[in-house]
Length: 306
Image: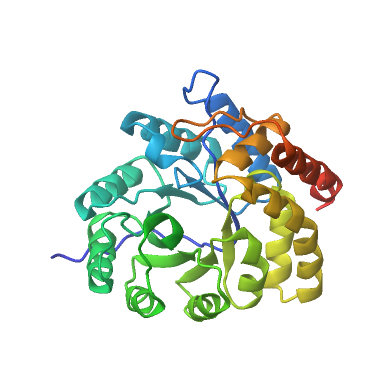
């Protein structure tokens, strides 16, 4: 295998949003709403955007839709912050093809989830990510989310992968204290470990992670940026105060599988419809939706002041 060094530099730190993908009432892509969502993020100080990750319903997108979404985001952002494309698939060859396509469409990096359903060994994961890093043409951020993939990228394997110059980060979504500590210890110049769990993001960043790829960021980008800034400056008191204010909304978003609740929140903010694609269904009126909307309303003064 011929090694290819990626001739691109990308700095990943702070508050990064895992963008939801807006759909119109008929289920088609709603790029006008996508523009509103991206602008909402940039105004709020978001430091990076993920297109077509799990929050973006990547597995609900047709190939042509994925390309339109990524091309639109790249054009809308205009190099103001890094754009990461979700390119992970169960098969290594498909992941490489998708990563190359993301490169051609202008993405700054690829967010590559562990292969889902097939449950590879740690050596299989090492060889998979190494192949994508060497043949995909983009800087790679590893993404570990065992609750969705039934596959756990262990810290020792991530440490081996971090030695590859084309692998620039890890999004760790396991929220237990031991994993947070082990993952955070891998952060170093050129390799950013990022939290993938909103509920523990502030403690993870205070423990040494360099930022967060966040779902709640879709709704409240300014407070999330303030949280990341406080954590990365070591201001535990300020970070704790912001995290406490965000906690009710984070808890409210746990009422249904992601991205169902966050899309209900975007509808409440009049940024995008709550439409999701089957087999997901919209959050129905009731106690959970009321709690979400109440939590979001309570944060409005904080969001504007942050």
